[in-house]
Image 1 (cartoon, rainbow, N blue to C red):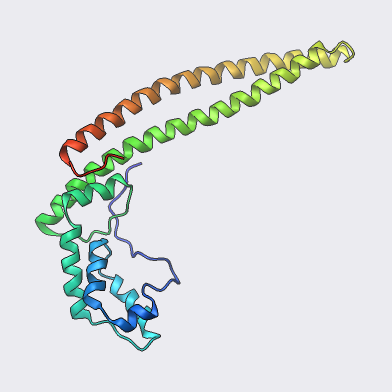
Image 2: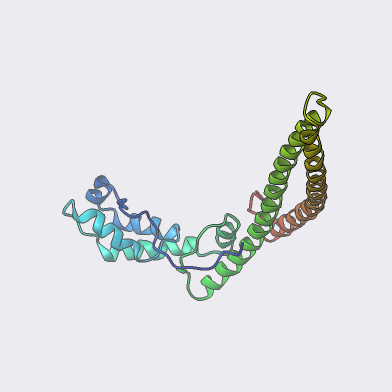
Length: 210
C-alpha cells in the first residue's frame, strides 16, 4: 500500500496536548523543539493553546516558533525521512526548501521498503487464511468418509456424503494449488525485501534494517 503524503493535525480529539505541569512550567522553546523534531504540523501550537487556557496560561508563540524551527532542522533530514517511510509513518508536509527535498527523497525510499514488506505480509496472511480453510475442509472430508463407511447409515445418506466428498475434494485441490502458488510468490517477495533492505542499508548506513 502506497502511503500518500498528507497534512493532518496530530493528536486524538479530546486529549490535551500538554499537561497542567507542562503548561505552568512554560518551557515553550523546548516544547516547540519537540514538536518540530517529531514532525508535528505548525497547527500543533493551537492544541497547546487549548490545553493550557484552562490553566490560565497562553503559549509564548515567539519562543515556541524558535524551538519549532530548530526541531524541524533535526527532523527534515534524508535519514529521518527514510525512517518515517520505512515505518509506515505519516508525514505532515512540514519540510520545505532543499532540506525538504532531501527529506522527501528519503521518505520515498522508506515507503518503497515499507511497500515491499507490506506486500510480503499480505501474501503471508493469505497463505495463513488458506491454510485454515484447507484444515477445515480436511476435517469435513474426514467426517464425510466416516459417514460413507458407516454401514448402519441409510444408503441415501451415504450417497449424499459421497457426493459432498467429491465437491470437498475439488475445493481442496483448488486451495492447495493456490497455496503452492502463494508459497512461490512469498519466496520471491522475501527475496525482494532482502534485496531492498540491502540496498537501503548501503544508502542509509545508520539504519537498523528492520
